[in-house]
Image (cartoon, rainbow, N blue to C red; front, side, top):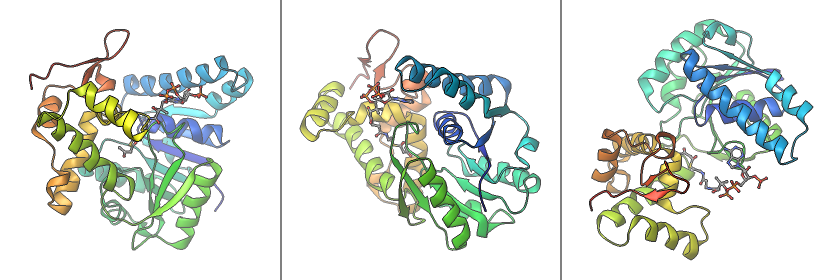
Length: 294
Ligand code: CAA
């Protein structure tokens, strides 16, 4: 089945980026959020990125306008009805995702393919809750979706070859490097990256270095674009904490356990860059390490 319209459920950190690149690839996009405020925020992020691309001379104003024109924001699931592909990019909470699919499955045309951008939940748990487990797969993007080249494509035990082919073609047309990942919690990247970020927090708790020393060390010593604590703030500490909970529940291994510092920061509402405070305070001109009293 050829794709002409893509639905994205969730316009946050990941969803707005997936909506933007889908529209840039030429598809009509329906971006669904829970309320007008969240929708305006998601659309605002897309407009900001398109504006930057024009400023930098990477895109003509007319093309940016055309991309924006292909994105239809809504709070109504009904607008997704004639989408060929619906990609879920909600918070990492299985119950919320299942409640959403129950509604969307009843509205969207039966031949459409569904995908989850989950970072850590096994895909089969969502696929099996719908009436179309053969047309359900994982499409795992990386933040920022506009820039990161990888897409993990996840086939569950029920995903048909046709749905898998559609997912691969979607990724290819977005210009992503597509890697087939097994339906194992965390897939390939988060199986390796999440323990690394959690371990950086433990190294900090154990006094191996200060926040910025750990980041500077990994940037300079391993040529990473961001140090692990900056990256944790960038991913979102609430998201990292949720991923850790899911992976620890699945594998019962210490490397996936959320360190106490992470859990306390999330309890305090310090979600990292998006909330203005995490391992760094982002309120000034430059991020400043937060005094966590350790
Ligand atoms: N949208 C669009 N473009 C963006 C962008 C965004 N949100 N953020 C950065 N860019 C673009 C910039 O416009 C710039 O483009 P040009 O080179 O054409 O001018 C380019 O990316 C580089 O950006 P900057 O110069 O501002 O900054 P940088 O060189 O430090 O790069 C970065 C920023 C690309 C984010 C880089 O720091 C990086 O790669 N960091 C690591 C990101 C990472 O590991 N992501 C994965 C997180 S894990 C995950 O997402 C999975 C999960 O399930 C948790």
